[in-house]
Amino acid sequence: MATPALILGSLSVVCSVACGGGDGGQQSTVRDSAGVTIVENQRPPLDSRLGWRVGLQATVSIGTAEGDPAYELFRVGGAMRLSDGRIVVANAGTGELRVYDPSGLHLASWGGQGDGPGEFGAMAPSGLEPWPGDSLMARDPFSGRISIFSTDGTFGRALRLEGGYQSVVGPLPDGSVFAATLTTFERGEPGTSEIIRPDVEYGILRADGSVQRDLGAYRGSELYMVNTVDGSPFPRPYPFSRNAYPLVWADLVVITTNDRYEIRAYRPDGSLARIVRRDHEARAPTRGDLRDYVARQNPDRPEALDAVGDMPLVEAFPAFAEVRVDRLGYLWVREYRLPGEEHRLWTVFAPEGRALGLVEMPGSFRVREIGEDYILGTRTDDLGIEYVESWPLDRSGS
Image 1 (cartoon, rainbow, N blue to C red):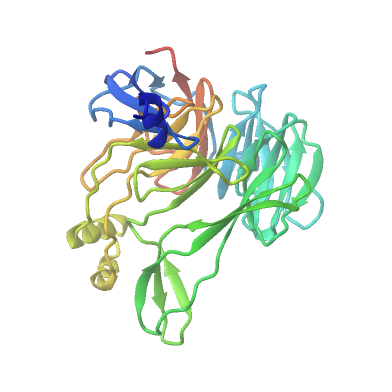
Image 2: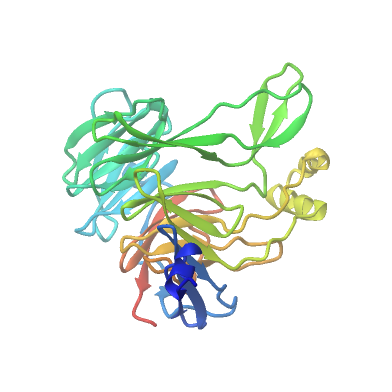
C-alpha cells in the first residue's frame, strides 16, 4: 500500500497551505505541481481595500500648454524615477529623454531624433526600464534596438536585436534580455472582417543582442481586421480585445494573456516556474455593450455606430486590464471595468503570488512605474495636453 507521501507525490502535489492575505481576509492556496508553484487566490471583496494608500493629489506634475518648450510634452512613451529622485521622461515627440529634478524642474535633455549614437528614430523613445549597473534603457522598436545611458546622461551603447526580434520587454538580473516579435498573419477574404489573433514569439538575448534561447510562440493580442476589397488587411482597435502581457518579474519572465485571470511566469530556460490565479467570473459582452462603448468613445461621431453591426463579439470580457511589477517585486493587476463600473482598482500580489488586496488609483492617469513610496504616471487633459505626475504611495497599512 502506498504511503501518504507517495500518494501526494503521484498527484504531483508537494504542499498545500492556506494563507490569509489582505484586509478582506481572502485566502491563498499554494501548491507545487511537478516543479511548478501554483498559487490559487480568492477574489478580494469589491468593497474591501488593502491598507496601502495612494495620495489625494500629485506631489509633482510636469507639463504645460505653452511656455518653456522643456515642459511641453508630446507622445510621452514612458517615465521612470532614478535612485536620487530625478524623473526621466521619454518624450517621443522630440526623440528625447528629458530629465527633471525631484520637484519637476527641467535639468537636461538627452538624445534627439536621428540615426546617430544616442539618438532615436520615429515614435521613440517608447519606453524606459532600469538597466543593471545603475543605468537605464530606452526602447527604439522601429529601429530594432535599445539605447543604454548612464544616469548622468552619457550614452553607453546601442543594442541591436538579432534573430528577427523587434522589441525588448526588459533586462534580466543576469544581464540577458527578454525580447519579443509579432508574427505575420495571412490575409483574409476581400471584403470581409474578422477578429484575428497573431502569435508573438519570445526569446532571451545576450547582452550583445545575439539570441541565447528562443522561447517559442504564444497567443498575442486580438485585432479587429477589416479586409478591404483589394485584399489589403486593415487592423482596427477592438473594444473588448484580449491582450498579451509580457514582463520581467524578478528573475522570471511573464508570458500571459487576460483570457483568464492567470499569470504565467517562466524561467529563462523556457520552463514554467509559477502560475498565479485569482477567482474570476467570466461574462460575455452583448451587442448593446458594444454599441454603448462605441457611442461613449465617439460622442460627436454618431456614424461610428454604423460599423458595430458587422463587428463580431468576443466570447468574454477580458479577465483583467493590465499587469505591472513594482520596484519591490510586487505584482499589480488592474481590474477590468465592465460596462457601468466606475472603479479604478488594482489587485496587489506579494512577490510569491499571494493576493494581498485591492488598491484604488485616483484620477484617470496611466501608470508608468510603481516605486516603494510613489506611483509615476501620465495623464492627458481635455485639451490634449500631456502631463507626467508622481503620486505618493503609503504601504504602512496592513
